[in-house]
Image 1 (tube, rainbow, N blue to C red):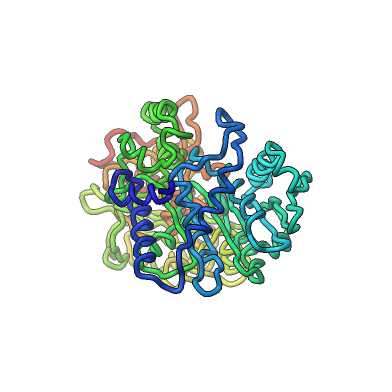
Image 2: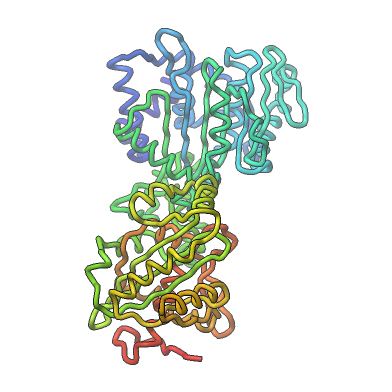
Length: 555
């Protein structure tokens, strides 16, 4: 019995539990073998690639110099990738492969071994194999691992020409090199195999698309993505994984895409991250490269230092969590979303905050409508961005502004500068239907806007300080209301995206702090507008049964 056959049996019999996605893949494989199709599984081809890899050597840690003996799950991965072929042509079935697995499960050296196997065994003269990653340094790690393997084995070194940035197979002139998102768009054309490391770090699909578009002339191109989960749930890799899961669930058909996802099981969006059995489910290399003793050290740190929990869940259990600096959990915010209509609350008291850009980027309005007893606040958001900036951000951040506009979630204004008149006209309509208090705005950026709104439209506006001292109390109040479920919002996905970008500044000596986007280029305007609105609300509430722990200071 081969290693991969043993793995299949163990998954099928539930002797080994590596989660629903692997169970579904095994069931799919057995069904395909049994029922037949235009594809067939050829053990002799699978065995050839496995045998080649197992003649290699590890290059790091305590395994350095030892034979590259695959674990059962790794053998299964290799067998699926190379063993399935087109029944008529004999060419590889899978053109795209996604391996999503937690850190420390041997991804890098496995990627290097696969690159070497493809370079030597694929029947593709003058093939081009690229190790891809977001940065040059990251891409070079996998490449250097392949070079190190070749250097360790004299028989292999004799078959490769070794250069600083390339490994070239002498018999077929196929070469291995690395490439990153920093490369020119013309690089990577004509790739036969791509091994993309840590794709979750990609901001856009540009590198992926460039590499894939250049593979069209190859008979059996192979694009392999090996990555861990990340924190950007609006990012391109998270969207890619959503598609992968639909394929495994049978909702999308794609005969050319092999998908292996190793992750902790989720129940109703929650992970039992404290359960040692869950740790084993997510980590196929448990007890090999993922050592229980080290794992417990990381777990203990996460328990004792809560800000480390998201990183533990993401990197150790392969679950998409908010970043370690995230202020409010995305699931908590999502649970507060309601099907709200602003017009249902016309005639009531409201407080409006605005946060905007004078440089042609996002502008945001937040309309806060408290209920009569002031125990719950409903938040409505409106967003604006110039069309030219929307086009730039669509390409850079994979944000679908056109779709958001069609859904009425944002207004795209003409040109490359913020059209303040569009915002003012919306404010005139809103203020005419509510008992509103002076609109809270940032005087540092919106003084001209406020002057125009007052002089031309008779709107009442009053600057709200953005100092840490003045921002602390409404920021804390916003957080407290969210935690207690005393906020409802209109389910605008732009707000959810902006909330995920929020970090908190380090408190000063008096404990004062405010929201920040940290080093991110992403936006937080909607949340800033909400805090301005709440700040204005607290100023005007003389007595508020909800606010007991904060005394609002008026300068």
